[in-house]
Image (cartoon, rainbow over all chains, first blue to last red; front, side):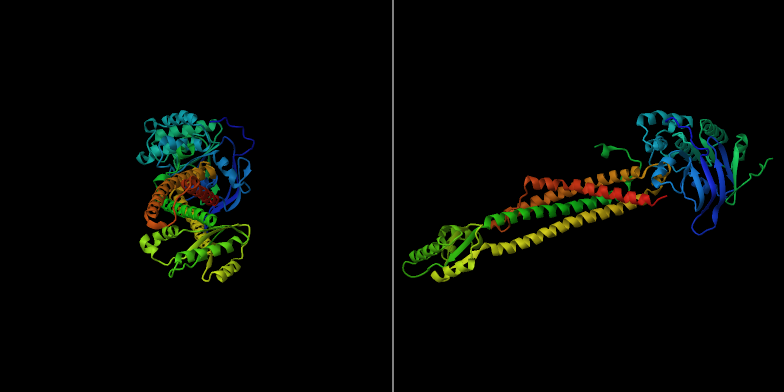
Length: 235
Length: 299
C-alpha cells in the first residue's frame, strides 16, 4: 500500500551453485544457478518430484540451502541476521499449493494478515481487502472461513493474501490448479498486472495451455537441476 | 486495557491448555495467598510478642498457704522481694499482681475461678526493666533465693527466643512455598506454551512466512497467557480469601485465646490481592521468553 522504492540492485534473486538435501538423502536440488531480474516473469515447470516446490521453498525463505549462495534484494542470505528475515519476507508474496489459510479466520482476515503483520492501519485494511476479494469473485464470501469454502475459493483467498501487500516478488505454487480455465486466465492477468507494476513473478505450474497463452520465460527443472525447457508437447 | 482487548491471529483461547492453565494457576495463587498471609500474620505476631515481652521479668514467690497469718506472711515475702528488686540496677518498676488478677489469668486454662482460688497459688511480681541495661538474671535469682527460698525469676527472653526461632523457621517455610509456587507456575506456563506452539505450529509457520516478527507472535502468546493467569489468579484469590476468613472465624470461636488473633492489616490485604496480578505477570513474562526462545530455533 506504500509507494515502492526503486530497486537499488540489478537482481531480485540470485542463486549460485545452490544445493538442497533433506537429512542424509540425495540432493533434491543440484547446482541451481539463476538470476531473477526486477520486473521479470517466469514459469517454473518440471515433472512432479523434479524439485519445483523445494526451489520455491528456498525462494520464499522457508528453507536454507545446504550449499551455495543465495542473494535476495541485494542481500547475502548466508550472512543476513535472523532479525532481518521478516522484513525481507514481507517483500515476498507466496501462494502455497495447499493454500496455508488459517481456518479460524474469515477470508477478509486471512487476506488482511500480511498487512496487519506489517502494521498497516485498520482503515486501509477495510478499504483494500474487500475490494481485492471482490475482484477475485469472493464478494459474497468475505466473512466465510476456509473450511466452508471450495478448493477454488480457497485458492483465490490465498492469491489475494499473496498480492495484497504489493510484493516485490510473487511466488505461486500451482495457483490455478483448482480453478476453471476462465478464472485461471483471469488470475494470470492479475499476476501480469502486478508484474507490469514492477513485481517479479515466478509461477510453478503444469498447465501447458496457460504457459503457451502467456509468453514468458520458463525455468525448467529435471531431477533437481535447471535445464533448457523442452518444446511443448502439442508442438 | 488495549493489551487485553486486542485481536489475535492465534486461536489459542480455544485449545486444551487454556482450560488447565487457569485451573493450575488458581491452585498456585490459592497456595500463595495462604503462604503469604500466614507469613505476614506470623511476622506481625512475632514482632508484637517481642515488643510486649522485651524489658519484662516475672518474679515468682511461693505463698505461705497454712499456719497463722499466712496471708500477712506471704505479703511480707513479696515486700522483701520488692526491696531487692528496687535495689537492682536496671529495674524500672516492680508491681505485685493481685490474687484476683492471677486467678483471671489462669481461668481460661484451668476453668472455674472458685476452683482456682482453692489452689496454692504463688505470688507474682511483674517487673519492668530498662532494655538498655543488661541485668544479671542469675545473680538476681541467687539474691532472691537467699532472702526468699523458692523464689524464682522468669526471664521471658529465653522462651521468647525459642518461640521466635520457631516462628522464623515457619516464616522461612512460607517464603519457600512462595518461591516454589513461582517456580511451578513458570514451569506450567512453559509446558503450556510449548504445547500451544506445537498445536498452532502451522499458524506460526504461516505468520513467519508472511513476515511476522518473533515479537509479534510472542506478544500474542503473552497476551493469552496473561488472560489465563489473571482468570486463574482471581479464582485462586477468591478461594484464598474465603479460607482466610474461615480460619479467622474458627480462631476467634476458640475459647481462651489458644490461637493468636488472626488478622491482616490493609497493607497485608494489598499484598494479598496483588497476587493474581503478580501470577499473571510471571506467567506472561515466562510465556514471552519461552516463545522467543523457541522461535529463535526456527528458520
